[in-house]
Image (cartoon, rainbow, N blue to C red):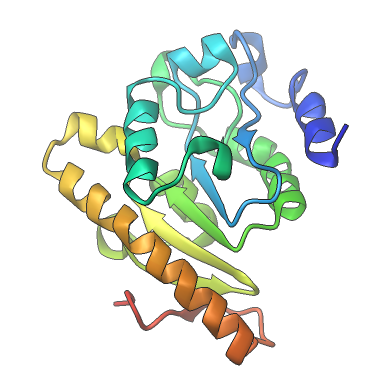
Length: 204
């Protein structure tokens, strides 16, 4: 069993917060174990809670379509959420719940070590770009250490606000170029400092 699979097994019985009392299943995450790209959403919904898999409802179907638009399949990336259990009535995650789950996410990132993390939604974005507004930084990339962080609206946003669908689709189409630029930056000019560095291609 791989270290990532072992971590999933650790997450399944988690009792760190109140959500453990109401969930049907924990949703650790799924996908490739050494992908270039890791997608981090916000929290499981009803379908995810029933199946124990991330992004399997309507938002997940849209995410699958988005991945196809850049010639990727779910099995080629890794998909998870900030918190691993469904909040009641799909309410927003509470600060204490996010804090309780943070070390699980940190360990996933450490084991997967992706070249790029795509944050889906403001709660995911806030872990890496605190104080920023998603309406201002969606579609832009930041480099911290050797990982590129790319902010997007959550796919579910397009289901509630049809006007955001175009933004989400266009942001997804930027990902291959951002990843290609990140690779060339890493090869030509390694970044010795861990502070955030705004990429010039889509920054602003």
